[in-house]
Image (cartoon, rainbow, N blue to C red; front, side, top):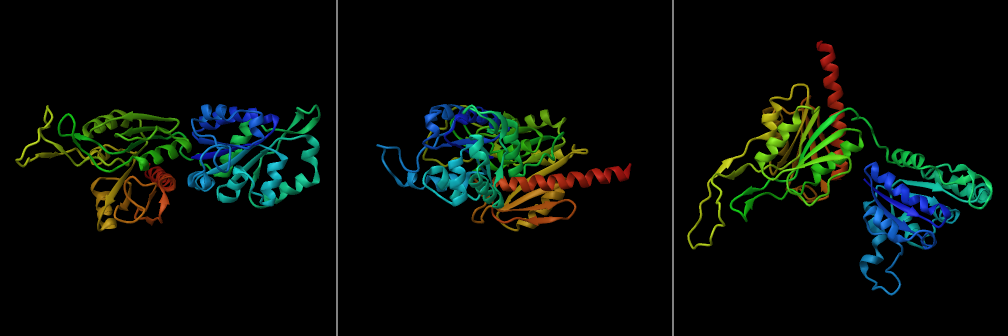
Length: 408
């Protein structure tokens, strides 16, 4: 998940650098937005090096830089892709601006443009914290659903003692998790997730593949790790970075993916097969590059193993989830696949529908469960689909465990 970290001008700004690292350890992607005053305490380069992402410092292009449409509407783009706006430290100035709807720099404009939850971690002088105007502003923000992390009490940089110190990292991270309503319902589970395409070589420079980007499987792996599971991600070739706290095993062909799945399946409690495995591979790949010719070329293909079906035969008490990309009779074909492949849940999508299919950030799916429950979902981001799939996995797991207890 993506957190936008707003850093405002105060002595505690240096602590935000440590907070970036702490959030990354929790699996969050962090982009930093700095106010002009914050740059008097810490340089943008520090946060860029820690986060690995561009640090945003101005609403428009930097002074002397070339203004363009991208810089003019960047606050909208950031607002649309962030899952949480976290401001730490939050000064009295930015709190007042958030409360009164003032938008005079990137951070305050982003606040108005975003529908993501907001967490503020105030840091200021004790008298500023206790001032009636400050408390009124905080009450206004709380009434709008903003999460406020109570500052710590102690010796302040101004020499006074009392409330106003930036809260500790653990308190801030806990508030971020609470605001995001993160679940920890997969703790103790071992998940195996497959993702991406496979590539089947024709010769040393050509291969058969499909349009899968791996985004759906990677979203599932990332979401499962956030929910407390240990995750092994077996991935075909993609350009995606491995999610934090996920063990990635890279493969290329269907046969390599099958072997990797078998190696890691024994310790698995839940297996989710989101990869788009090639159905066929060349029967006799060329050892040398095929030369151009005027004559037609006939390729003989042989079927690849059905990894889901073969593994599901050995599932025992494990819960098995498959994906079905269809172009017609989606529910009918998916329900047949659910039975034929001995799966507990099939995630079916019509790849011809707008907003669904390969290499997109959204998907439109129907969840078909072995217990007869069909759950059609509207167009959602793939991260949202991943969460809904895992919600259904948790439901089915609980149902299976209750049934197992009654049969004992």
